[in-house]
Length: 367
Ligand SMILES: Cc1cc2nc3c(=O)[nH]c(=O)nc-3n(C[C@H](O)[C@H](O)[C@H](O)COP(=O)(O)OP(=O)(O)OC[C@H]3O[C@@H](n4cnc5c(N)ncnc54)[C@H](O)[C@@H]3O)c2cc1C
Image (cartoon, rainbow, N blue to C red; front, top):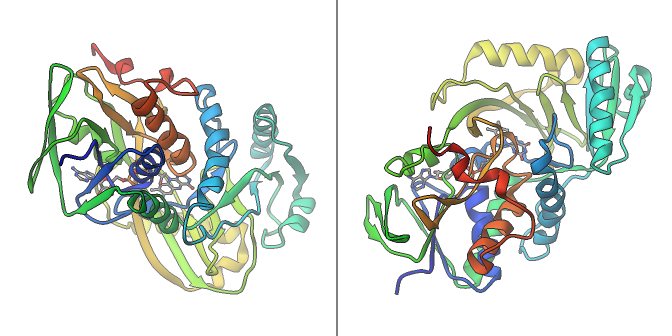
């Protein structure tokens, strides 16, 4: 028998959709060309906050707040913990100009209902002893945690599988054919698949999957290079974030994760000495201890960035049963649960609790 719904992509968005759809009693088949978390979701810093690392556009704010709580709720259904570390995010300003930017950012996060704490340099060093003396000011956002992203995708998917959904690995989708507002077939390297609904959650690869359809979705890959250090004793629960988008977090196992510039270099996944050297220097200046740790791994991932910095969530104009859930850029983990819930509502109820109008595909129509 055909599955009711095919989801293309086993990243954090595809698996979140599988989780929420299966909670509604719907049967899902996830098709993943490689392995679970093979894309951006396996390289992510997985910081989840209300407010983010810079401005959160207004239409995303309800999704942000909802998703922040839903991820923690979902953990209750999972067999294994998400290794959540709830230390908040400490945004560090390294000069006067950045200190001014922090004040503006403080106001913005407060408007989302979060009581942040602004500090001068010496207060910041007391709050976070890892920071060096060059820190000018800091802002602590308490509504922020980070987690193990492999546990998250596994938790979403395993719970869906327990409820009767399925996954097939090694299946590469080459295109989706539609006619008369219905799904015709899903064309893959392993033959054709059929379903009533299809959800395209292929991250930065989603435009390739949808390339034969009428609207071209402007999602591009934005490379982020990452350094993972050796594990050491617990030093901090904070995410320490700098205003140039660099940040560090110490994982539950004690390794430091250092990320990451945003580079528009297509699907080129090489690690470059230029970036690694530049950001190591910046990190060691702000957090001197890092200079003494051994680097264990270097890797890169592709954030799926949409042209207008909003995700794409909703049906393709060609077919109301072909749903796109992609383009979450720097914040796919942060928005994963809210997106999965919205997609499940769209399919099960025909409408969503929070408006997803701003994320509609047809904003790109007629270009
Ligand atoms: C360095 C870095 C740090 C980040 N830090 C954070 C953070 O702190 N917080 C946060 O919220 N977000 C962060 N992000 C962003 C976040 O990781 C992404 O937005 C999110 O992982 C995107 O998830 P996705 O499921 O849409 O895409 P992906 O994880 O890329 O998943 C897409 C999946 O689809 C599969 N696929 C692609 N094409 C096909 C096909 N044709 N057929 C079958 N399968 C296919 C791929 O193999 C892949 O597994 C970061 C990203 C990077 C790179």
